[in-house]
Image (cartoon, rainbow, N blue to C red; front, side):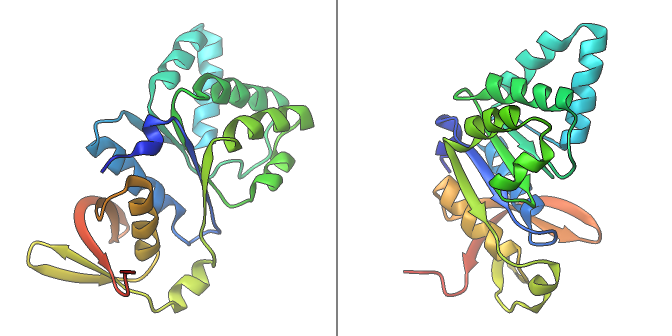
Length: 211
């Protein structure tokens, strides 16, 4: 798989409600990047902001920014779920600016891009952050929610050795989007089992796959 969006330093924005599979999809993209030998990191913004704040205190801020600039794929899950202070918004702007046109970032959010402004303290900061993210991004919108997901009847057929397994969405949704990003019918995906995420390499086929 090519992961060409990483080569081009394009971003990916995943928009969907809770329970529709944005974290599954983000993890699948993460593992696909690893399989293509790209360095990646998965982190939630609250943890990222704590890391930045500690770096400012101990004087390692510039070193931390250089570290994040070198990561080819950064995944920010639950992006702007809670409102930020102005200082936190400035820290995110510095991070986004450092990675702009240099590396790819995946933003997983429950809110559409116009709604991001409400979580950023200053309108000017909000415009600057969103402009650097959106202009070279691929946006993936997954419809529905956790209750609708349970009612859907689509199935993903997964071959792993001689075993054929069937799973409900969001696996089928994640597979299709992952393949469109990576340009391959053979992909690394995720499976949820017993409360844990297991990363496995699957050869996948979606029923009613277009010819």
